[in-house]
Image 1 (cartoon, each protein chain N blue to C red):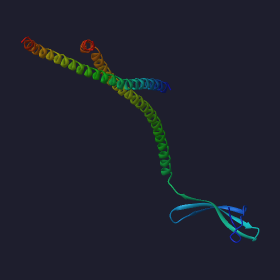
Image 2 (cartoon, each protein chain N blue to C red):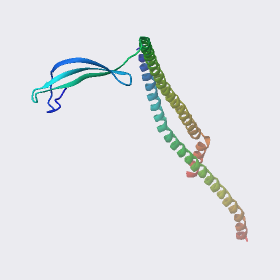
Image 3 (spheres, helix red, strand yellow):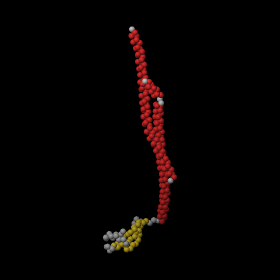
Image 4 (cartoon, rainbow over the protein chains, first blue to last red):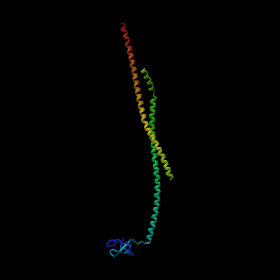
Amino acid sequence: MPTCPTCRSNVSEPLRTWPIVKAEKNGEIVDCTVGIYWCTKCNIKFPFAVGRQRLKLIETDKLEELHDKIKMVGKVKQELMKKVDQLEQEKAIVEESLILARLEDKAENLKVEISLLKEVKRELESMIKYLDHTPSLKVETSKQKCIDQ
Amino acid sequence: MMLTQSFDDKKKELEAKIQALEAEKVTLQEEIPHLRENLTLLKLEHQVQALENEVFDLRAERSNLEQEITNYTQPQETHLTSI
């Protein structure tokens, strides 16, 4: 918003405007619109430039080349996005199979642990059975009865 | 979608299997100490029985020896009394 250089109040409507195209020393072109504004408080007119753009002159061939490059980059971008989608899908599949593999592994480890525990249980039971059925105990108990009598 | 469905099913199936196996493991882990206790008691009972047998045998031996001593000492006494 243009402001009055004396009282700093905003002036919205210009009295008139005209475009200016100016070549800079570095080869750039500055394109802007200059307007003449009138401050009603100070009763002065002042110029103000709006919409300043820095431009460069470029050969048509180079411009077309750049357009082609932009198109090509756009295509590459699309292909890369497709590939990213595809890889994300593959990643999801691999993650799922990894979860399943971990669960299967856990189940397998539990099976091994259980078979070991079962073996221990079987051994203990067979020892108990052996001690329960050893003849010495029965013979000895009959001896004991003799002593008691 | 089909793949995800089958993954979920398989996952649930495996989780159920793991749960069952863990329950079985816990049961076995509880049973084994009881069996060990039973075995220890039985071993002690056997040990007691073996000691009782030894005591029985020793008593029997002592009784035999005492009997033998009595047999040897008895005739002398009769001889003395006869005089």
